[in-house]
Image (cartoon, rainbow, N blue to C red; front, side):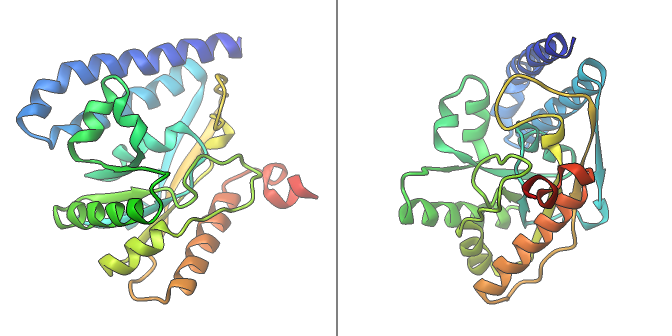
Amino acid sequence: MNLIRSILFVIWLYATLLVIGIGLWPWVLANERHVWTALRTWGRTTVWGLRWIVGARVSFEGLEHVPQGGALIAMKHQSMLDTIAPALIFPRPVYVYKEELGASPVLGAYLKRNQIAVDRGGHAKALKSIVRGARDAVAKGGQVLIFPEGTRQELDAPPDYKPGIAAMYKDLNIPVTPVAVNTGLIWKPKGLIRKPGHVTFKVLPPIPAGLPREEFMRQLEEVIERESQALLPPEKRRSATSS
């Protein structure tokens, strides 16, 4: 039964992406702010599908910490859901996405409108491009969302935070809002199966601007990992799985 529900959900996920993406494209061409209209609409249909097809509920906590203007957001990354649901929290999310996703049907056209592409093989050049893109997006009131570990992680994977967020933090000289998740409980980094359950996106108090690089990275990793682990049942926490 779980396999059947998962297949139906995947069909729902991409069918709604196609319908919403094509249906709203004329409005996006007229005004790029409708990229966020489309993202929010897809986010709602995805959460609906998880609830009524898979039997999985999605909650949001710490909404009092959501910035309304230009901001940097650093989120734990465990599933594809982490790239969809933030549009239901942040008013103008700007994702740092893998450049190759720009070639994907429908979604790629939206990403190219006002999101930030990164060439993972570009190293220093890519990092400079991300920083420039983040600077421009924040100046326009966007909330730049980056996954500090760069890719989706299993629940028990050790932390692997990359330096890109530190470069953005230093250049923009603004606070960073961390977000903890436990989405891997219902939606693994890879594979077809989606599981029933209840997952949470928890927006945490911002880390203030101006900290030394090492101290910033230490605080960022510590708070995201601690709060993400706290969202897991005891038997799923890293200390339990590694013992």
